[in-house]
Length: 148
Image (cartoon, rainbow, N blue to C red):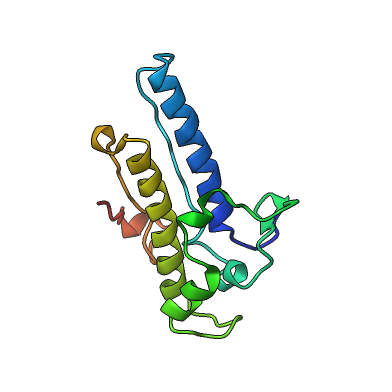
């Protein structure tokens, strides 16, 4: 819809629901494994304040009937992320600090769910970026994809 807003809780909620379903399938032997390709929007425009300061019902998919609540016990309140990122006022243009804090909370919620479902020891987590700040759309810059 192009609302220009991020909602890390909404994205994490979808991942947590998937992990719960996958765990159920593993337990019932309906599946031998699972693959979750989790792509956050947080490191892309608009800046994190486009979501941290927005109505929690707004997401990339439109207006939710209620704010996401599944990962709320694992993700800190948005106000604490703003404080952690330097207490900048909404509308501030710096992206890195709030994006990093919000994405850390988001990935932390997924890891906590893996741990609570006792899937952590049998899970391979690969984190990588699609590009760095420079080089997107320019082949002559080469591939600069950080991975952990």
